[in-house]
Image 1 (cartoon, each protein chain N blue to C red):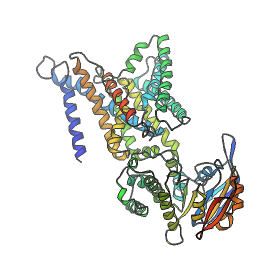
Image 2 (image 1 turned 180 degrees about the horizontal axis):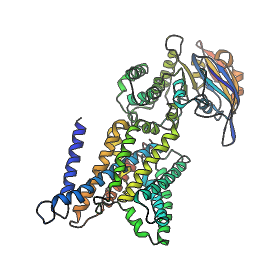
Image 3 (image 1 turned 30 degrees about the horizontal axis):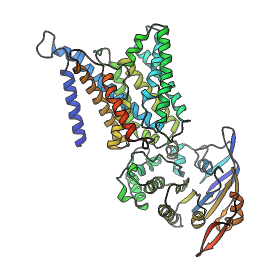
Image 4 (image 1 turned 45 degrees about the horizontal axis):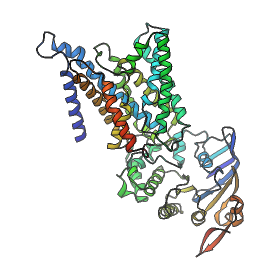
Length: 314
Length: 253
């Protein structure tokens, strides 16, 4: 109970801060404060919370699926695969609706992530650091293909936008797709026990009567949807899906029925926090939230690698 | 009753089990022995319905394990595979609760809580129930995993080398408990266990199933089947079964 009270308080404080921090003073300018709030600040706040929560949840699912805590969608080629889909649909049907683009991206993200899972089955489990390295290479290859395609078709700018998560462009009417993440989060919470079982390994999960492949597929579909929505709406933010689940796991363990809401909360709060920091560092200019998080996240990632190399194979 | 009818299993085109037929009734401890690579784990997986044979039929208590639905399977047979992911940060109680999953599918009822408490008590885990697995010793952790499989409340419990990482005290502790729990009486269960320590097999097993190169070498009551000649042939090295202080032990001859 106490944890939840504190969690709500932190969330409320961050939302409050996010609504107040910005170039336009809500009280006392010529612009209508309420309108700024409704059109820009609140959408931006929701977008950061949803993107952060979604990426953190996607991280948990990927980690449980391969039983390795050192991976996340960004380290297994999911966003790169989504970008490949986005590029293809942009080339084939430039005028397609956002939801169509996002659906295609989710499809390619699913294929790309499944490809990594297939690779992961052939990687020896003794050294948990091996898997993220292979994922980095795998994602790098897809990323290179994306860049090459973008370069030959003059779409490199698009890729740049998809790659760096930032929220300054979020306005009412341009972020609503992100609410899909809230729905997906709900579905994941319903499947929390099953995802925990995935984390126990294929033999244990199947022995307990879980339909392993079906569960894995549903989990990956949800990951692909989350990542594509985030890439399309605000751009991918690396390390969120890695760092946040690790912190929650160390703190509260792996029983997802209890901890999934906490993962979502921490993911949302850290990304929103990074966005606020990004707005303040060189005020009145902005630094993308993804950049702020990457600096924090890279440090935390190194700490995780250093602190628990032998325990990471979860 | 477990009944295998000319079961053959292949992996990537190469045979792992060839024409294995087996039949044994409930109760007691059945030790599965054989050299490395004999197909012992595959046999356990096949009995549990986790590996499908290319030929043959697998029946457990009348249920066709190849065709059964996953949750149906899981109410007949519990398998504790080798190398469980030991670093899952679950509490012992959470883990044992997951043993009830085939019965409640995510909605535990009162009966599930009772069974979890029973399993924790049976394996002397009450004091450790709220500790996390990654904070336990190897022996305690293995006991927790056995308790999880136990809580599954299946008539058959299949254990793949549960003693491999345990010191003699913890190994003995688990075997003593399993032995007591498989004696005839109320709530009697049956255990099939892969053992590498032949003296442990000689001490605890009621039945022996011996495999070599994917084929059944022998199966039968331990006192009859487990002879020096059979073991020597099975492992390709000279072994003898001697009686020491009223118990059978297996020694190099």
